[in-house]
Image (cartoon, rainbow, N blue to C red):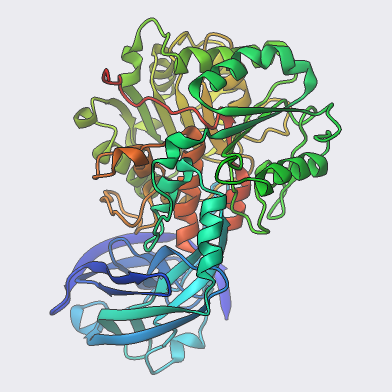
Length: 597
């Protein structure tokens, strides 16, 4: 096994059309104790990859992700999230499949398939990273077989047990440079000895209408609660705050109560709440565990204060702070509530956050035309900007942020974004409903094109406050004195009403999946109903019934992180820890001027 420095460049692309096969993933049977499905592919794309360590080929299948042991052949793999009944002994049976063998040599691709490499962090220099290559594996004169299909454990999200379905339809013989494709695969998954009573009890006990649309990302999910429950009992919203902010919070509390939330105020001078991570977590978990269908567990938690007022946990996957564990109650990394933070050290820093939120939710802005404007930016990185950056932004603008949705996008792709910093800041200053940047960042802001804390004071977007998303490093590093997300929220009569970003560095592949969904990284990705990212879960134009239209700022993070979870990346837990919302997790952002009811 050798590791060398790596720099990878792509060249020509060729399509391989398979015989008697179509692109398909179909649930054939879906019962409490088993489900079956059929999956197949029709086309494989082959890319040449020229690296400093040799020339290779790379295989791509639309809506699949490439996977494998580091240093072993990187092969397209299908991954889906599913619901698994509690206490099930999972048995996966391969019922049938067809085979097709293709010689890459005969197609003019004489190089070997590229080995799988780790994800690249956005602050890393790709040219200095090791190149993983397992020489022993590449001496294999046989098709390298692994499990055709398996179910991996993921964790529990609010009473629903989640697994990851993995299907590996392509096998590789390195010596012969041949691929064997398994087509028309039919698989049956049996949940032996599953506790269906417990499974249904957990769904009922922890039911929240705000999680039903999130569960739709699970291929075989079946709700067992009637949608009428949405209006039967109010959604519980917990505010954990330093007592210094109690009086300032009252207009916010009154508004949320008027909207129909059951608001629970939890101040840290209350001995039942306390002021440590342990005591606050115990208090919140007590509320969650005590939930019943008639007195539901909390769906939202808002922390009010900076880390000196409401401490954060130390992350377990890196050196960063996280609020995740306040809202995670089942021993994994998946939260049971949506959460956000009004970070403030003084009343003067808190008041603008409340004022902006109330004006927005009460629709009191003098001129709502800014809601039709969005700003989409693929920042500067010579290696990843043209593919990962442009691919994410292109998906957003072609699928959602466009005139068909009554939105005007100020779009800055990699080719022009580097010289567009002033224009981008001007767009935000003029007013927009949404802004998304993907590339490099720091605690001080977006790196290239630059938009930093010092630029916030120049903004003139009073009454025109956006939700902003930074798929970049460190912009929500809220244990720093002031990070970019905090500064945008604290700014009075300017800035943002919500900011989503990382408390640590982010990764190129994972950020792409976060926005676009778990699918092949390409410049022009297309919609897939079973590979949804944060963009997809924010819009409602693919046949979703209106009862599922619950898309809040808090849900956007969960949608993005679930897409990363679907990938099976090594950084799934890390992403749940680092991505944070500065702002109200229950706020539903307008994307376009709403129509009158």
